[in-house]
Length: 243
Image (tube, rainbow, N blue to C red):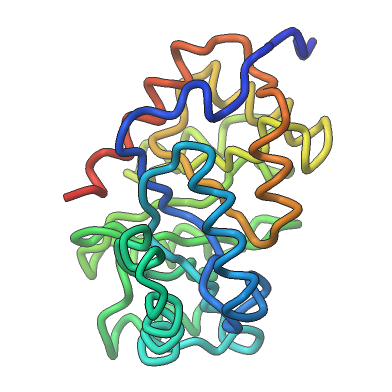
């Protein structure tokens, strides 16, 4: 049974120099900040949670968010025209939807990574892709270190941890959405996140902030995970992306 007895907020435990590796802060490029004004408001509020820096990761999902390194770089340049944003936004990468189009793209050009060859990916939200493991293997053959965004939100993977443990055994890293621990996505997602934390399956964390409402929820809500020490240890693992 989930315990909701935790009495701390995220800002109470964020380590010094914490870097957010998953967010949608760049203006007008996906379903995140629609414009520069909203982007600046979100960044101002996220800094109040003691988050030190962020790597911007807009969606790349061919057919829906047809971003390219150029469109993402242009949005990044627009955002950092504000000097405060320049200090906060360390750089840019992308959250890539894993599909055959991405594999084809990766064979033609370098994908945008968080650091070195760490690549942030997402998969289908409702069902396991038949060729999931083949696509992951193809990206690994191209020397990418794969980080799967928010595995707790893939409900079909969380009832039984077999598939998640298989992914881990194949070298896939897992990134926790911190919003999942506030109840923002619903009780079932929070339960999944707690279960994965208890089983030591996460490697990194991120906010996955898309809008001001989410920033306010993350900043004002109590974290629904009683093991503060374990969560702090996970947050500290993001330090490698400060290099």
